[in-house]
Image (cartoon, rainbow, N blue to C red; front, side, top):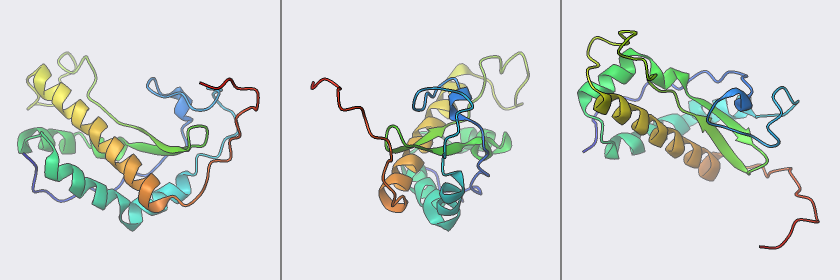
Length: 156
């Protein structure tokens, strides 16, 4: 399907511990552990073109129609993305924003009228986050993970 729209500005990455997200566990999962999530470098990569390149790739294949995309833009969901270095997994992790389950009770957006639209927006935002994560890791990140697994791990 695809969209012919201009990319929104990249998010301003915050310094939230990713272990506080319901959908992420990084390393040992210790909230508050002194870990370098390399957000400053990732922010620079997003601003240097990773965000726009990823957005263009996503927009070319997204299943969102213009009305659903307009809702996501109106709610400023793209600004709520978070990206962080996950040294344990040697990857760029991400947290995708989404429309909450109580959207109807909260009258979240006047044009939001079905669970299909909500789940479509949430799924496509997750897909976009994965694309950004992959682009950052494959084309921008030039550092190696510092995590060394214990030597006594069993062979699988």
